[in-house]
Length: 582
Image 1 (cartoon, rainbow, N blue to C red):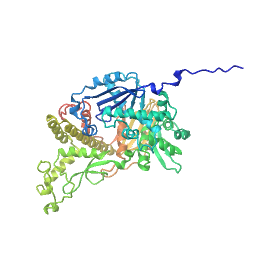
Image 2: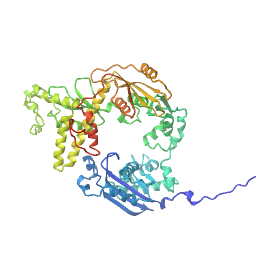
Image 3: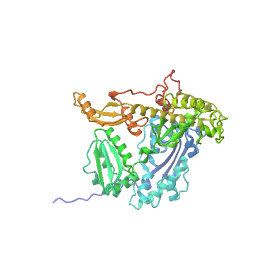
Image 4: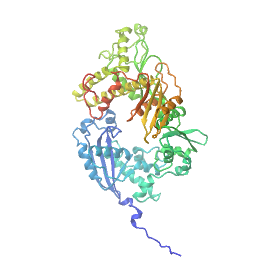
């Protein structure tokens, strides 16, 4: 019988002790939340090893982009402060050299590393393969809800009693994160975690609840579709969609799922149901409809259609612009929908720049004006209002402004662009760049919303639209859209020799959709937006168009590319008869 030999493991098998790891704790301040369109305004980094600070790096950064006012309010960093700061091309290489050979640590690391990677890509610098630790992930694993109500840096700094309190400035936040890191590493010791490799695995390890519920993924089919997580009573907890149901559902029970609410939901769930779909588009549309119908408590609230807002030109003796929660069939002009009230109010301010509609919310009728019960405001003296409240403008004269505003909302957005652009140029000439950026954001909000409304109205007016998109396997995905609503979906296989029978079968089996009166649509704005995104994909073919599909020649839709480009590389607006505003 062979004898068993014992093998002594090497020290390498034990991993790198945490006490011997050199960490670089980094924090960034930026102009916004998207690395694709925003830039770095400040970087702070602290290099530590064995509890001792080895070095620090902190500097403001001139990223060449305007700093929005709400970012200035949050961080205190103004455009003047970064005007003389080193550019990104100098700061990023300096940071990479500072962090060479170290482990990066950040609070919500994907945010900071995302901006650093984007900056490296723009500068053609290769991104080093830094090991990364996220203090948010560690905090989720070692701190209970009873100890801290959330995992924000301010909350953890208060819990651990850091020497420096975070204040949304990069170096101060990095110093606070150092103390938070060591507080979390002490907690890891109670779990027997002593090496870097163990710490990285521990932060991403699935919870016991996730491991115990893995059997719920058994029997889930592959292919596109919608899935439901249900509790023991059959109540729907969460609804999702995927191009591969089996892979997606199984991911909820792995270390890759770190969202706390979702992990909590998995612990409650008792079963998973699925609805297979013909295409990924059908799955996405079904998900939107089912979420709107069932409103599961673990889905994001932003997906609920009743939270959408609209900008309405009211129907009264002296109409005004009002932010409302419903788009009704009342003959009024609307643009939207908006995801938030601030966005709707920004669009309203842009439209007001080109009109003299009254700003007040008080009821205003000819009788009330005649009785002297209306109140005027300073806008009259500024020439921004015709003062119907004082009787200086009757209903017929005021109606001219209403017709002009309605035209700007539905047909011709150029007067709004010209009015706001003129003000931006004046503010820029006076070096009031932050106020100019506010005007730019308002114009963007108006053009996006007006363009969105025009796209949705055009799609909802079509009795039938049959569209084909290339599939991943060489075939085609079919969609039948009636009055803006997905009525049918199917697939043409790659081996098909004739497409006509597949199109006829899909059209014949499609749902019957009747047109809604006035501005009411047969589908939700979210569903129509989803369809339009799908139809914007490369290689899409229009098989059948029953009706006229177009947007106004002078409408906001034609200006969307120009205004979106203003956030990347500003170019002059040359008008419709000049160069293309791209």
